[in-house]
Length: 221
Image 1 (cartoon, rainbow, N blue to C red):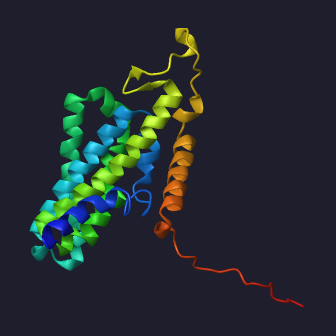
Image 2: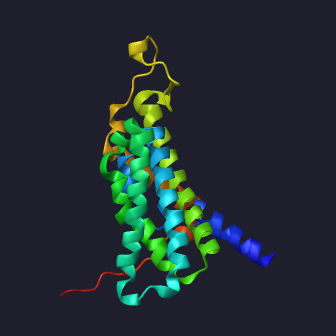
Image 3: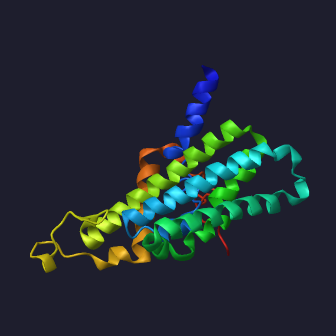
């Protein structure tokens, strides 16, 4: 039971309490760039999660055979190889979405979240536990992207997953799309607002102040 509970916490903690995007501020470039719609957010989430889980399993399997001096090179080669495969699959079966994602699928290779989990967790844990940790972090990343993507698509185009939710003025309805929601700055502010909400609801996520203001200003005279 303790082992099962430990695996469960490894899987669920990254969803909210240890979320890699909102708490550790990892992988935010793609969170800002590919969340103009739920479809692109889901596709990017699935691609990163697949790469993260497979790379975690592979690196954990060979962790005792990787010389420390070249461990980062080996990890990057493994991740890059998996990214190429995922990118080719997207181009073959989801070409339009692949075009919208542009270079951001390829940039999974250098995503801080992927390299961070392989370096800090997969190198020190067995394959099963490493893949569970990778899946949890991938789902936590996905949750943030889907939330931001849903808000941006809903208020930027009045739709979700291509299905019209609000009838726009052009369609004879009442809703005027907020074009700002489809620009990168909106994702930045939405992500900042999400971080603020979570750290308000969960005070333990608030970072300790490194510098404290003095009670009284020093006399410089």
